[in-house]
Image 1 (cartoon, rainbow, N blue to C red):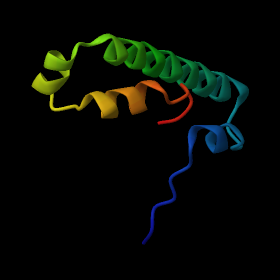
Image 2 (tube, helix red, strand yellow; image 1 turned 180 degrees about the horizontal axis):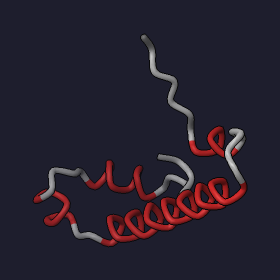
Image 3 (cartoon, helix red, strand yellow; image 1 turned 30 degrees about the vertical axis):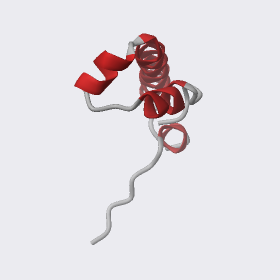
Length: 71
């Protein structure tokens, strides 16, 4: 049996109630805000700290350059 996984936007179009949809929207906004915060933070880390966590400076720059809505 396969599992259908809906992305956050597709979930909003479901047939659930308005309160559940608003909850989904709030969760999506909070997720986007957290991604943005993390990407700003990783872009500010010096190379020696990136090395400690196993991330190259190129990988960090690539991640920091993504828009907040991209996972």
